Length: 434
Image (tube, rainbow, N blue to C red; front, side, top):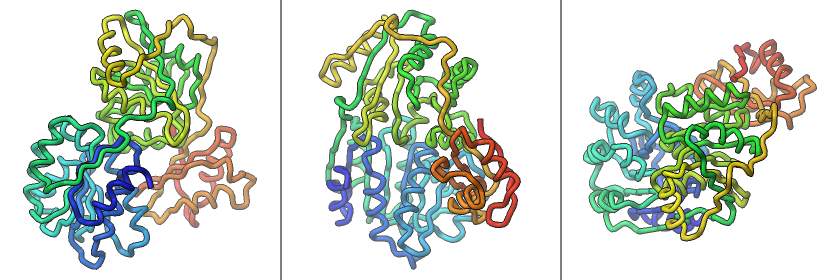
């Protein structure tokens, strides 16, 4: 067990309310998922647990983790209710009451108002990344949702940071919660953090120099505004980098595809805002680059904490102008240690430099609803072919689409095999994502 699981699970299993602070990627999802599954009555078809998340991406990740843990419990129905998706299929799914609902506050409230979702049998309410939900202005929606739940319920509140607003909402909705705080700061000795002072108008040029000097296989680049994310990703692509943007203006399908490509190593650079990247859990992320510093030092720490995980060493690089010295000072005071500041002249740039991702993603027009499984795709690629299984990477299955990552060297061959062959005895359209 991770520290947050070891400290919170005993209280959760005893049915106590919990107020927990833990960093992103600490294993808190499994902690509350085990707790709500432990008391689930699978033969009682009513909504017994509700998990509220700030973003669609996090809601999807939480749903997948609960499904994984629920595999041993037959006929457990889990649905995800998020905006950005048609409401019709959600209404149809809710006709047969799910045991567990995971969703964003806006869409959950809409279903409660339509009376398509009923919470009178709710046993467990979870607020995940509660600080971010409050930052995004969901306080009123959350309180209106809570008004529709039974007074006798277990309330689990998880937050990466601990502002006064969290204490206020805890006092309002929880009953003598057990307070657990674990690993609120990331291990700085695992993360090499370097700041670079830049001249006005040299931000993008310096970012390219950082990529050429450090050559990270995967980088998460933070901007403060969503418009800037798309502009920067476009600029990097024009310079030959495989970069994608993640922000709130993307359609859900586009957001899913961006995350899948970055997670399976077929995209080298993800440019994102803090909100879009919240809950993003990418293994082996080599570098976090702050294209712009956050005005909040706590957010800065959570940004860079996405690298250097699971005992690996990480790299955090930050750009700032002379007028932003106060932000650097705030970070130093927050972490209670000096920071390394280097000159951009120390960066070694390379002519005609390329940073190609090692994998390519193939998208198949068939998914869970077509009964397609990961094993079917792997079998189609390797059975009666000379493709080695070790060159095939992560496989992701959604309701209507499937994605398989393959090494760049076999991408053309794999595309031809899947396009001309059959999966589970059926032909599907297949294309390469760029």
